[in-house]
Length: 385
Image (cartoon, rainbow, N blue to C red; front, side):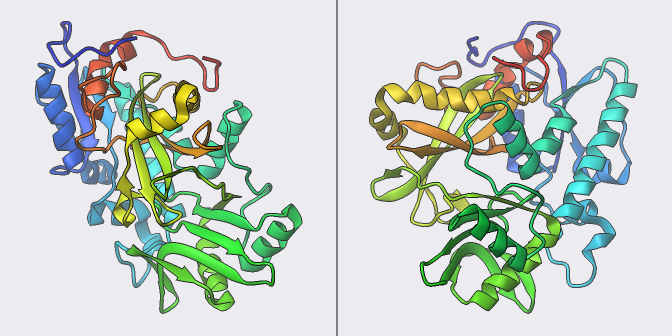
């Protein structure tokens, strides 16, 4: 399938509504892509209204689900009464409550769409729910034969004591601890043990007064008592623990790939590089050079994109999936670290040269894919490509 350049779509054009936070750049970028394709301005259903139940789904609309992030009121509504005293938008804890609020809201939304004549969802709430649970997503990918890092088997560890015991049994000395329902590296800890019992935790989490806060500064904790406290505070919301895989590098910096897959095809790639284990751009990471990666990978480059597409194929009713690909063996192979329901916010990035979305940004690619997505039924979850 080839995604066409912006231009009028075949009539009748879909009436688009976006569930999102009004004024956010995600909404603005998607609306700009719709206008460039000759579509009417999408209506906006505010997340605040969706969470308060004060909304109505217009008949015949095609409803796109956008991220609820970066809005303090929405975050508070999602977490609900579980917040308690001392809540702040920068707090790390409370991911399980946030996830429960998100999935409940999406279930209600899906019901409202079913009751509106001719209305349809652009995206599947059940698949979004899996992508926002790193444990479930890892099991799904692994079961489908998608290469993923080795994960600590069994239930989520209850705290530091259980974690260290199970890591010793599994022979794992370098792991990533990821909050089961976190995003944007919130609460992620790169944990490593030395030969004489030393411990080092690298994270953007700030530990202050017995609470955890997100920070834009990556810091290192070497005190066993501090690391134990950190893990004990993260554990109640659920942890996904996976092997820390040595990644390829670019110009002396650790590197990975965010691959955007639209309608089953890898359309956009951004190289993320960092001097830290976490390559997220808001934590000091920088965009690398995709052409250098293609040259380094050589004939393995199509295989890297195919791995991302195989991961996205596990979510066949999601028109866009952002795949975090961990390159290993000198860019010859890739493991899927995460899948992202809202992994398309990459301003200024256009589609791969010669690819199906060349010249389009991530939102333009999704607009161009609307006809194909609307008229081709999705295969069962996990079906082979």
